[in-house]
Length: 322
Length: 275
Image 1 (spheres, rainbow over the protein chains, first blue to last red):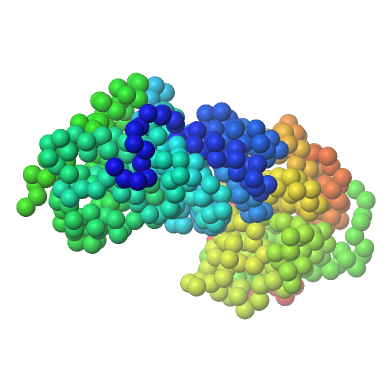
Image 2 (image 1 turned 90 degrees about the vertical axis):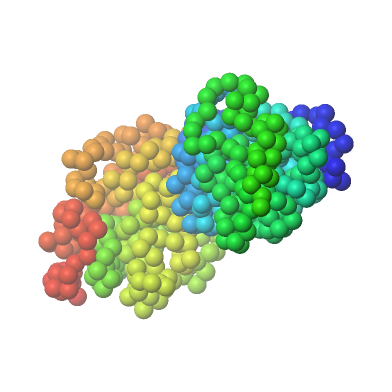
C-alpha cells in the first residue's frame, strides 16, 4: 500500500462531513469566510459554520438561483463565499447563474454540491446528481474537485478557502471508508497513485476510489497487478498521470458514481484520444439511464459499482490488449 | 414630492440624459444591433444616478467606498456605456466599437469594462448579485449603497422574487431597485405577454418600501432616491417610463427593444433630440 493510505479502512465518514469539519474550522480562522445555503445546510454540513461563525452563515431559502447570486455578490465584495445545496439542485437549477455570474464574471465562488451520485440512496433519482460533473466541467474557468474520502474533502475545502477561481466541490451523503492518513496533503490538479501496478490502471474518483482499491486486491489474487489512481481533480485533469498509465499499463478502466457521458470517464477518454494513446478502455458509471431508490449498497450492486464488476471489466479489457 | 434639484442642476441633468440618448442611438446604429428602446427609457434615471446621487469617482471606478450600480436589464447597456463615457470612465472612441470583435464594450455588460460591477444580460441575475453585494456591505458596516436597475419585463423572472424575498427578510435597506416600467418587452407589451401589475404592491408584500414616480421627471427621480436613503427596508422605485422616449416614432413601440435604427432613421431621431 501507498504511504498516504491507512493500513486498514476501519473508519467510515461521509465526505460531506469532511467539508463540514473544514468549514467550521476555517470559519473560526478566517473572518472572510461566508456560506450561503438553500435550506439543506444541515445535510450539506454548511450549517457547521454556524458553530464558529453564526453571523457569516446565510440561508437563501429554497432558492438555489438566488443562493448562487448572493454568493457571487459576496465574493465580488471580497468574501470567501461558499454556496451549498444538493449537487443536483445547485448545478442543475442554478446552472445558468453559475455559468454567467460566476464563470463568465470570473468570480471565485466555491460551489459545494452534496448528495452526489446514486450513493445518495433512498431519495431516488431526483436527489441523485449524476450529471453534475459533466455540467460543471464544461464551463470555462470552472474547476472540479471530487474528493475520495472525508480527509480529502476536508483538505480540499482548506485549499478552496484561498483559491481565487470558481470551483465545484462534490461531496456525498453516505459514509464511506476513510482511506487517507490524517497527514495526507491535498495537491490540486495532481492525481494520486494509490497502488502501483503494471497490468491495468483503474482511474476512479469519489466513492468509487475505495471500491477500486478493493478491486485491485481481487485482481492481485488472480496475479493481475492493477494501478489505482485517485483523480480527485477532474478539471484541470492530470494529463501526465493518464499518459503515463496508458504507456505503462495494458488497459485503462475509469470508475465514477456519475453518468459515463461527460464525467471522469469522458475526461480521461479525451486525453487518451488526443494523445493518440490506443489502449483498451472502459468507463464504469451509469450508462445513459436514471437509477432508482434503494440503499446505497443495493444501488451500487445493481448498477455495477462494485469491486467485482470493476475487476471483471479490467480482465475483459486486458484480453483486448494486443 | 418637493423639488430638490436646483434649476441649474436640473438643466445639467436634462442635457446629460439627452446626450445618453444621442450616444445610445449612434452606438446601436453604428453597429447595426443592440437595444436602443430601453436605453432611451432609462436615460433620465442614469443621469440622476451618475451625475447627482451616486458617489462614483471616474478616476477611481473601483474605490471601495463607491456606491455600486448594477444594470440588471443588461441589454440596455448602450445607455450605461454612454453614461460611463460622459462620466469619463470609457473613452468616446470605444463607443464606436460597441459589439465589435476585440471590443471593450460587449453586447451585454462584462466585468472587463471599467465601471461594470457584475455581468448581466441574462435577466434577473444581476439583481440577485446586487443583493449579495448589499449583504456584504451590511456585514462590514459599510455606508455605500447598491443600486440595481431592473426591467419591468425582467421581473417575470423567478429569481427576482427569490431575491426580493431575501432582501425584504434581511432588511437590506442599502439596496435600492429602480424598475424601468416602460411597459414593453421583447415580444410586445407586458400587459399582453405577462401582466406584471401591481408592481409596487408586489414589492411591498415582499417587505420593501416602495414609491411610484414618473421616470422621466428628474426632480421625482432625485427625490425618490433621497427618500430611499431614509428607508429601514430595501427600497423599490417603480419608475413609469416610455420606451424609446424622446424619439416620436420609437416611443412606446416594442419593435425598438432590440433593433437598431437605420442611418436615415437615426438622422431624424437626432434632429428630434436636438442634435
